[in-house]
Length: 82
Image (cartoon, rainbow, N blue to C red):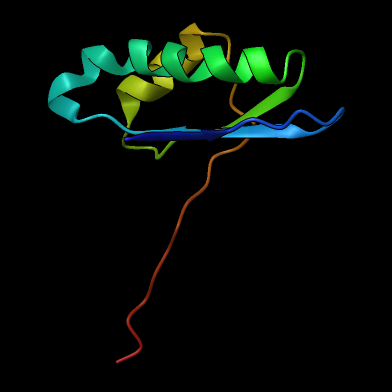
């Protein structure tokens, strides 16, 4: 599963997200490349925000291989109020 939105306005940030089935983690690099190609063509030189769940290790590694760096980690917490 993947999605992206490419911004063309100067100074704007494009967005993308990706997930792969853990059993097919080897496809993550191709998916990340596939997403970055149209974004690069539409918003050359712009920053890209890439949201990846922490359990998607193959996608995280593929993003790092493509030059993405971590800005911060996000943890979602919940509590039952019963």
